[in-house]
Length: 455
Image (cartoon, rainbow, N blue to C red; front, side, top):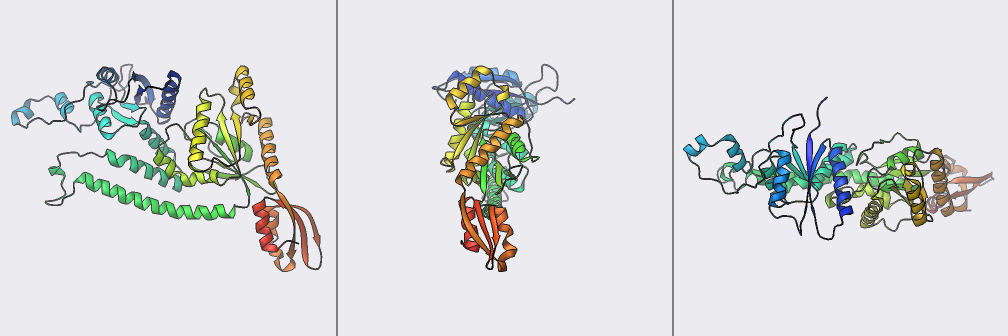
């Protein structure tokens, strides 16, 4: 069995951050790292007023971190030594690796209890220079929280749209972190070219991002057309923190085969399915990408079109993992992101999921706090899912309106639209055509009235 690569977490607890909040953030970062395929073998934490400008941590904690990675624990001076043939001849390989600002990180020993971590993950957004200094001091590759999330998104994206969105976010993250492989003069593209290889690479990235945005815009137009066709239908969106159980509820409510995994960001694509058993008119349920603390703004912007499903829904179901001790802060993150995209005013209902994992005392506390505004359920309990289904149907039924339509015999070929968009309560035939009394969502009824005319 192949041993998984190892990683160590590094974090600074800043003033005003409680021990509980800091511990929760680190726990979540550990889950992100494990989702990416690494084992977390250690954590280094330091209380500071701010991140150290050079390498995030102070000298003592930097040495402690390096012990877990096999590095030297010091940041070499960026000044390059004067070249001499004698120096180059007798300088040791280890000293050379330490003094080279752009050397590749050393890999830890393979296998065994003494194997070193090969990656350091920092629970903060850090600058490219801080990342480089940490690499020099630890001999390991370095990623910040944003880099880990971008990598997970890149691995899990499946649809063309999600892949384009993730690639834009990845390139936006990578561009400022490019570095020269050698001296500036050595990297010039020809005499007098005036553009280094790094500058050329960055320009290529900018051009590629422009191409991706153009392609994404075309896909967005197609999606807008599809959403326009569904505009008169009843639509409910499942929203919430990553791994709260949205996909499990989606599968239970619609009978669809959406991906269900106990991983962060298992779902990156919006899936739309009809509530099952199907109702008249049908109710569409969408499963959206999950949220997380410190979600990079570039990713929020990239997934704006995906989150439009939430913005255009008639009802938002905030799915909360009741078994997670940090679920209150997770709910706040969900509300903040939805407010950021303008969906904060959409009617909503709280769903406390995974109640089968919650102790009785905590269940009672949740019911006291949220009893009037929430439902408490487990996506794996058929009775709970049935109750949720009835609540959804009841919500939309209260918003439906009735009207009478006359479908002329000349338009009988379009009568199927009435049955698709509304519930037919009664039907009669006379010399003018088919008279129907229908009940449906206001937008759908308005569309039918414009098509056939009211009686």
